[in-house]
Length: 235
Image (cartoon, rainbow, N blue to C red; front, side, top):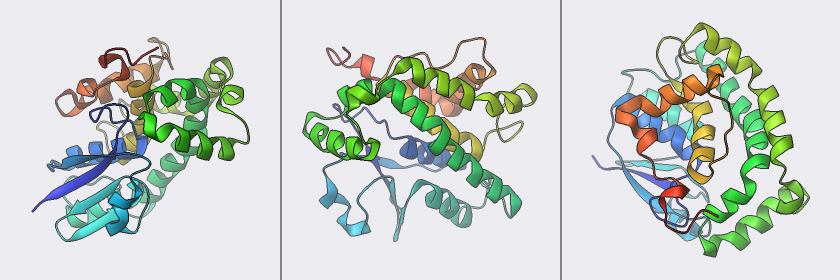
């Protein structure tokens, strides 16, 4: 069975930075499932026409096409029940909380910190599209939105509940990682790939968790291409 994940790339096809795609890549590794990743850029809308969708991740698993990172995790649990990601009932509801927490509390703070690095990491042909759509969403220019000091302060406050959990357990899902970890860690991979900004100190419990997540699955996170690996790309 062929399995393909359409995965957002930047100025190099190997630079994969979508937080949502990273969620899925870790979930597939959790399940022990092989996947071929195909580079996709923001303006390659036609490449996803078959899925009736205009963003990634898109997972093609044999005859099945699944869109949206959370829906893909749900699909993986239905189709490959070994090593559950989300769990059932209340456990699934708790995992959905982590999805919203990452997207609504962590990512906005990170975005304010790394937005100019992110713009630099995007393929040049996508930058006008990215700037236009995001500035419309923010209601201001990137230059006005960009404020690392405010972003890091916002992130520090948002990480408080994460610290509480990680002081008691090595992972958000307890003694071993699962959906909650992948749903949140995708955001940290996004920032790590496009920027060298230090989001947390090495004395922070979150820092230790990030390192444990990077080590998973034969060091998949550590091995990911970063903007600093591309000659002349990081300003």
